[in-house]
Amino acid sequence: MQTIWTPYAPTGRGNCCASSCATCWDLSSQRQTFAELSDVAEACLIVVIRLLASEQLTVIALGKLGGREISYGADLDVLFVGEDVRAAQNLMIAMAQPTAEGNIWALDARLRPEGKKAPVVCSLKTYES
Image 1: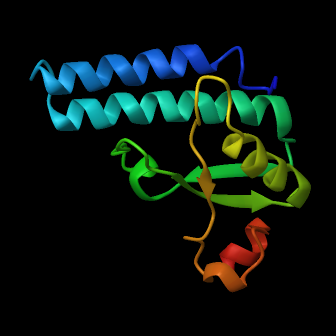
Image 2: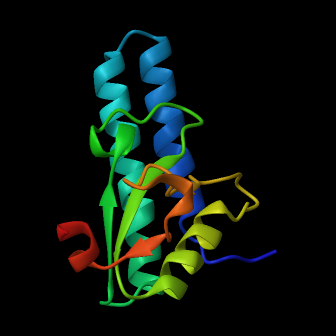
């Protein structure tokens, strides 16, 4: 099955593998490995945002992604600000799609200030009030 990730998956997987080997062989610190994994996760997210999102949506990194501390198997905590609910839903679906190379990173929007009961996307005015 071809997904939007198919051309990008080998690059992300290779970078994760290199980071993993460097950590196992004590060639890099855990902090450096987390920063490298965060860079790869951010790059993957940027690619999908450019492919699927509109200018009506802003994605803010929270949690370990925001702190550049992504570890193996983590999801990406994000906050969606804007008007384009459909774009946010498409981003979450696309990031969760498995590829022949494996999974990328799933997006988790549950860390929003109002929790799971709030809409996935809120306008800037909503957050300002």
